Each structure stands twice: as structure tokens, then as C-alpha cells.
Length: 177
Image 1: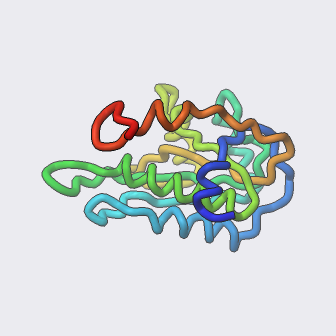
Image 2: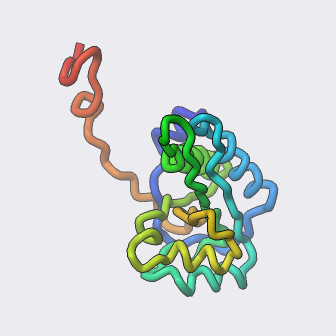
């Protein structure tokens, strides 16, 4: 599949995963794809931790409530460092968003599935902070997202997208020509 096909076909997967281990080479390729993403003013605010140790995964899943991705044999945790880049602007959110999208596409390219889990862990219950403590993340970083990674054992549920014509135009809002 080419990149355009992967973009069109990729969907968030929230089902159960096969227990097959993810080769470290694949985890590295996924993280390299993430770190190849553009970064505002090249501040490179995004860092990543791949977790494939079952004991550490168990510790992480013990704090992720309600549970999600608990059967995945690996996850990548996304860290950000809030660095001001240009005119007192911080592009950390844009940086890690671009990195996550690159990784989601690489995950599908390698034959796996995943889901961007962010709001679930950044709410008032501070799950991301608890996960960061388990992973010994320094205080200047924030764990903002995790991607469970594995082989899907359930059918993918493709979401229906609104038609192109309702969301994209040429030269001015609503112009179809």
C-alpha cells in the first residue's frame, strides 16, 4: 500500500490484540517515523518511549482507568517538552501531533493497528503523570499520549467520513469549482 492508501484506509483500533511480540526493529522504525516529523522552529519537543516489557506494561495498565489497549504487546508513550520557539510561541502540541500521525501511518504500513490515546490520560485524574512516574520520566517532560501497538484480532470498524464536498473547497469557503 502507498502512503495515500494507508491514510485513506487507516482507522483507530480499540479492540483486542494478538499476543505476538512486536520486533524491536519495528518499534524502532515506528519511532524513527515519529521523530522524522516536522517540528516548529526545529525545537524537536517530542520524545518517545517504546514499552514492550510485560511487567512494565502491566504496571502502566494498572493506572489506565478505564482500561484501553490492555491486550497490546507494546505501546509507545509520547512525551513533550514545552519549549518556547518563536515570538513566545510553543509548538509542542503541533510537534507531537505530527509525530503521532507519522507513527500511526508507520504502524499500519508494518501490519499493526493502534489508536491515539490522549484525552483519556490527560484529564484531571493525571493518568499520564502516573505513567510518567512508572517510566522514570523527568519532570520537565509531560507524557501526553500513548499508542497501543499490535495485531488486531477483531474486525476494523471503518468510520464514515463526511463527503469531501462538505469539508473542502477551492479559493473560498463553500466554493466547489
